[in-house]
Image 1: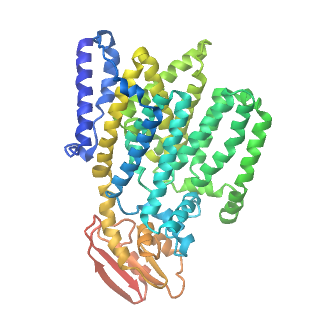
Image 2: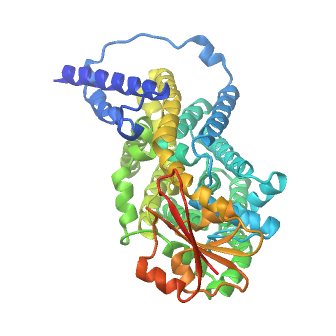
Image 3: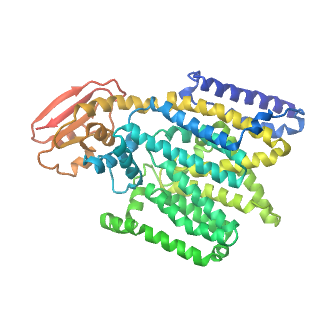
Length: 537
């Protein structure tokens, strides 16, 4: 039976490798949506079951692999990231919904154009960075360059923290695994704040572990630096509050209140600095939302969920394959399994040196899924941090389990991850990006046809992106029902053949009322079909 399991594991692993090679060279069209099958997730338990009948392979790593300095590998991964970012721009060249919201705000600060789609519940950090980028070069490329910088920042932080928690060479494997995951690579080219805030959160987690593991002054410095990192993450993305709550709970559960009370003075100073840094936000939130936490809860209320907890069910459904890909899923699972062993050793009173840290990272990852799953809707871009934490633990677990074979096993993992990076890039380019790009092929020509020298207001279900490309203010039909447009504003209602959030004929007539109108159609080649533009005169 074990020999059959071994044969099946070999066949599935070979299929997984062949699949990624075919994807990487652009032959993934035979897969539904260019999505690879999770062969390795099935093969991994078969490999473990068949371990007693493994043949005694004897192969050595090429010497030059070990002679290449680690910094060269890190620079290679960062350079690969930049190349992928540039290549994927051609497959999704237009601003998407969320991107356009922050881009409109950035441009409004720069030249006074309307901030179409903006809501007070959104943080200002990304738009501030975008404003700086637009001041240098006023186009989409400048904003997307901010996304590249944030991605490189987070990958660098991931390497530095993983190198401290494992070894520098194992940290490079973590980088490749992260980059190969569909969840990460899909959003890396876009002007969003999720990846950048993840890097800051990872620094916060590292500082907490440092505070407990370092002695004397080093631990104190970690706690004093923590509030500045937390503030930066918060102003970049309000959604980090859920992550921070989960991390704080994990720190209390794993290390215990007494361990933190030992840092009493520095902990109080850190909390004081944090509160001081939040005062501007509290003042603004009280003014626009009636109480200091109004904006945070307002952001949560924007979640597109059917019921409380559907985000958690979503994460359960996609964990771990849809978060990190086939190979990354195996590594994440290894991290979870290793954490179970760490809990057992702690209960027996015979822990290893890093068992408590491992338990803290695992508990943080699990609680983030739970807290965010109940606080908001589920999206892979919301949970990059637990993916990174479990990947770090998984790489370390594989190395510990392989023993003398660890270098060879992790080299094989890194090689497959490198191939998977290109396979995932093809999946993103040909499977994930065509849908939004086809939609923009409808919204873009309509927006550009409505550019106006004077004040203009466009009513549509695609308000941020149409606002960005037209330069006009834009609102949804629901928002338009509750507002009175400023005088001398040219108002146009936009309806697509296959559009969303559009009124029916009766509701449309009520919106138009007794006003005269000019109606014209704008043919488009996009997925939304022909647009009908009704201008009120």
